[in-house]
Structure formats: structure tokens, C-alpha cells
Image (tube, rainbow, N blue to C red):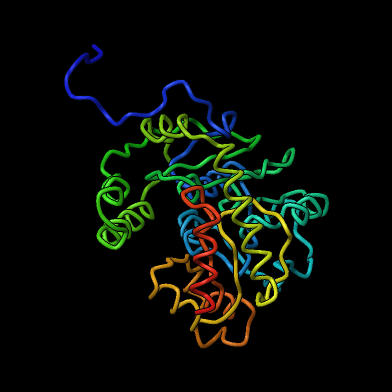
Length: 310
């Protein structure tokens, strides 16, 4: 029997529309990738060396052979042959590679697209594509997946124990709850493929997606206009991606973090002596992922630029 009365749960829109309403809703992006690999029954997968290590966790869990390929400073790679029973994963880095992905979809029939950095980029027809919700919005988990090959419906996830850092940052600072956030990250690494939780899905129905998209686009354009002359990456004028990627120096990254501009770091497992002379090492060490999300407007972007030049 449905409960009626008692204390009121977290308020969220109940009749809102999800941005990826027609997609398969799962608990994490890494599990969406695993879902694609399982459903496709591939014999091998090719993965960019510049990658999130969580993707490898999914591949190893399946016991599937994999091989890395390198990308350049333009995030493109030297094309190679891929067998009909092999998959090739490409990451839409920082949400700026939509055009290149269209090219790859014509070249590779077994292309898989990781749009974890590109929530607003829609999938191409017939190309398995997955997304991370919590990289773009204040959520404990959640992922979307587009695929023509479906698996039996998994059990539903439960998210209620993963909210402390999200609510805690409203009352206190990110630093106060960072340890809990990292603990949730480790916990999600171990989670099997599950359906998106009811609470995450309800929160996704309460987001003003257009407002968030416009704010990200405006913030990106502002940073691009100001920082492109010092950026070692050549970037498009417009993007609605996860962040603004500034390839500069580790010293600047450290300075910004010290001044409380908290930047994402991707992906530190590649900072090894073996890879020291590679593009991947350089980007993992020196690429600064500047925040452009919907919490901020041009005043905060101006403050970021000020702290960069101080």
C-alpha cells in the first residue's frame, strides 16, 4: 500500500521532461559502456589512451581484450582498420568533437561514442552512445544510453545514501564534503549495471535544461575569447560541453586550485614515466578543465580570468 502523510521528501518536479527521455536510463556511464559491450557481443574493443580509467574497469569485468590508440592535441587519431566483430570507442572530449564524430561514424560501423563530456550532443542514428548525468547536474548518479541492442532489464538502483555531499555543499563548502564525494566515486566503481534510481530520475525531470545549456554556452564563449591566445589547444568558438579545456601548465592549475577555482583533472593515471613524452601525459598533467556550468555567469568567468592573470 502506498504511504500517505509523514515528513515531506526532497522536493523535485514530478511532471518535468528529461532531456534524453527516449534513452535507456542506467546508474552510471561506465555501466552504460559495459551494457553496450555485452549487448554487442564484440570480440575486442579499441579505446583511446587518453581515457577515464573507469572505462577499463568495465572492459576488464567482461574479460574482453582491448587495445589503446593515441590521439593528438586536436583529439583526433591516425585511423586504422577495425574488424566487423570489434568495437572502437571514441570520447567526445570536453564536448567539442561533434563534427569529428560524424566523420568517424561514416568510417567505422562499430563506433561507440562516449558523450560523458557532451550531455547536449544528440546521438547519431545507429551509433551506440552514452552520457553521464552527474557531470552536468547536481545528482548522485545517473546515465543515459542509446542503443538498438537491448539486454534484459536490470534491477533498479537506490541512490538515497549518495546525497550527503550534494546537500552538504548547500550548507557548507565543497571542501567540507569532498572526502564523502570521493567515497561515493569509489562506491560507484563497484556497482553493477542497474536501472537509474527513482530519485535520480525524478530530479532529472525538474531541471531547466535550456537555461543550463545557454549558461554553459555563454560561459564557454567568454572564456574562449579571453583565453584562446594562451591555450595550447585550438578550440571551436562555441560549445555546450562539460568545461572549458585550457592546456597551459601544472603551475597554473595549482595556482587556481589554491585560489579556490576548483578545476577537473583528467586523467591522472596517465602521468607515468613510461608516457612522459606523449600527448596524453602532457594533457593529463597540464590541461585545466575550467568550470562553465549553470551555477555561474559571466561575473564568475571574469573572476576566473582575473585569477589566471594575477
